[in-house]
Image (spheres, rainbow, N blue to C red):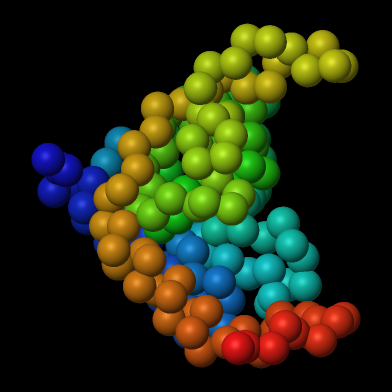
Length: 182
């Protein structure tokens, strides 16, 4: 059974996803929690910023990095802080976001629905698992993190379904004609 605290934080992530939906972004939202308090939140802003990397997780991470830099924290202090944080996100982190979370050393991730096309926490790749094999350049790919999915998944799926059913006015126009429906 999911704890009341987990449900509370996931509800906040879903609220961020709704904010994204309101401005015609793919509805994914997240919050980062330390010591039982939300210390950052984010929502998809890829269309708004015209930057494909501006996923909810990256937005929240950047809020913290900027704040912690302003406070004069060293890289090791930042790493220590991330190791005490939990991320709650409405949809399974994509490969890019899961990789970033692993490199940053986040403690744990809770997500709503799985991401069958781009999921980095088990659906496509399992970047949350501790992978001690160094990359080609000798850099360790990350520490790995605990991951729990399926929390409020139906609410997250409903938001995504709403977005895709209304059509995405910001999607690029297809270069070839669509196949005719029989």
